[in-house]
Length: 422
Ligand code: AMP
Ligand code: GLY
Image 1: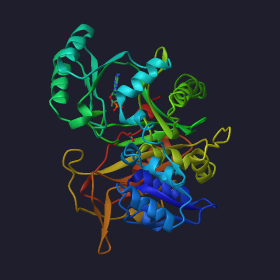
Image 2: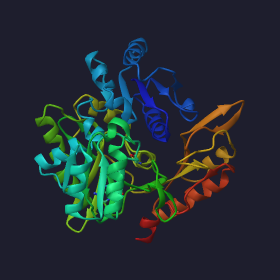
Image 3: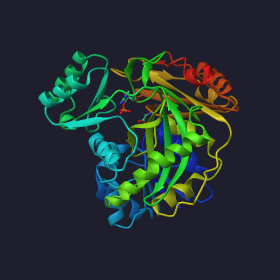
């Protein structure tokens, strides 16, 4: 098969590593890719926002499957435009990507199809939202409806914070993404992520993971795209996975189909596991970053036929074969991330780190310049290690971090604390 992979992050490097291993692969192209994906296929400068250019490239290169990494092209309808020309794509069409693109859309789907989630209301003006917030009391959660680069959720511990969040969002802080707001019940419990491959009809449980969203140790400081992850999440036992499939994933698939917008691709459920079971916090319509970096190394079968089957509505009955090992990723970020990451600092020693036992290094915001590897983004490298148990995976990952010479970078030193403690 000829495959075009879209994206440039650590997630896409991890996807490229898995796809490149497939005996079914003939050629892999990555648009735009990064210095890590260069070794696995051909990085190409196709403008992903120009759907006609993507279609032309696919025709020229006889692409059999397009795999879309990030959410923006999904929400922009890239898969719809590929579908129209008969090019198979892994990822949902625009209407189904609303599961990530609009929090209100997802909450209404939950209400209609009895999917467990926090109580909520949708608002399009601040006065009515504030009245609701005062009636409900704090803590309470205020969310911009649309995509806001992970910054559109405010967990307000006081009424004053909730009202300030509403003023900020309705004041235009997130542009059109904040024209509508969801105000939601504060949920207590432990967060976990669960991923299912979907082909429009059926869903196949894939794997669980836990992310570390805050920039600082002990889960402090501002939210980020994710500072590290591990898989599996110990709280996601076989029984809990089955319950999430039955109570959340399958009703979502049925609901999306009933609405005429079947979901295909990967459904990423952000969950709160509380006393009365799992509740949906949010859906994403794509693989997670850095969750992908910890899930794919555990896969004990070929990824490519699974992605292809999801795109072509013929997923096998399952289950997906996973190694009974834990993978843990530490995100190595540029100093100043997430507010103002410093660019251009030099990274040395990656090759030395990559040969340590169980270790894989994936690139995100890097660039090569005159034989040197430089930081070129916020999250720059992902240092992943596999081991039979999480404690050992953690030790291996940090040994690899320490083998990298990058004074311009920093990482959290406590990735995996929840699992190690348990
Ligand atoms: P989201 O972007 O919806 O994943 O939200 C970002 C983070 O806010 C989540 O990972 C949770 O830590 C927190 N959060 C979102 N919704 C709730 C909720 N209803 N109750 C408690 N925490 C929440
Ligand atoms: N790591 C969270 C995400 O990919 O959205």
